[in-house]
Picture 1 (cartoon, rainbow, N blue to C red):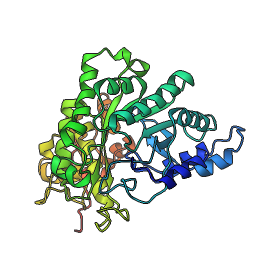
Picture 2: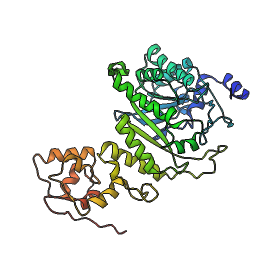
Picture 3: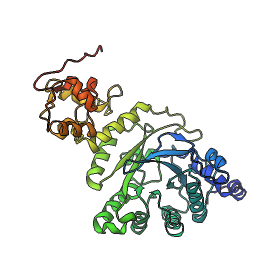
Picture 4: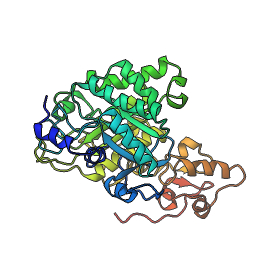
Length: 399
């Protein structure tokens, strides 16, 4: 076992919430938004102390709502030696582990205190992926069955998890995910040399979709099967945006992948990749923009614009770049375009496209002020549209 004696001693003298703090802080996490301390006084003992000790993530749920989400791990001890990870085997860092009972009890306590209204549960690998998955499932079972916990649960599927384990996790969670790390076997080998891209990572995602197709949805939590997600480490091993987005596009089509998270690489000292530069935050941002175009805006993968290196343009968002190549000399007539044409115009999103469709039932749109009142960013849309057969005036770009 790769657990050092000092880590065992460290665990023995820590109380449960101290351990949870170690497990929660600085944890690599795909759904990070704004990290802050939640203020929701409910008269609970030591609430102020709890709020100070447990930063949470403002996470976006599959239903579009945002909640304070506790991101934590069953254990930060790990027998794997992933080249980018702060918890890799052999690295000198504080470790902590919680039993399923301890972790479930702590989650409920934080929920009652108003600190977190959901939990994302992952884990370091100890004793293999199957044994680790059992501990994660046991924690979720205690939350749902002993404490009747109704809040959001996102469970990580461990590499190599068995189908029965994945099935049980899907009965307990609102979302399940497995980290693919990279877009192909070559990149995964450089990121996580002891993980098998096809067997350990891609196959569990396929199994999730097989369960959704083979078994009735009422067997899932709240009578529906959970959504699925994955995560990529971006910028560590020279993977291209084309490879990342092509795989996510395939997973959306084949496995109904709901979300891909693109975690920009940040070097960690005392890891093999410590001298690699930090990933440009704009690259992560552009990947998210492109992902949502593919998922929500009816773009085909072939419509994505990549440079000669297979990467997205960092200076312009992919929707604007596509429009400049396709709509600048063939503008879209706002009064006749269907919904799918409208949402491809820069400055027009899903909600505003629907508003245009409703407004046109009774009125013709003849000027930019009408579009502006509907909620359209006319400064972005104006050069790509026609209004009643005429191009609206717009300010050309200086550069």
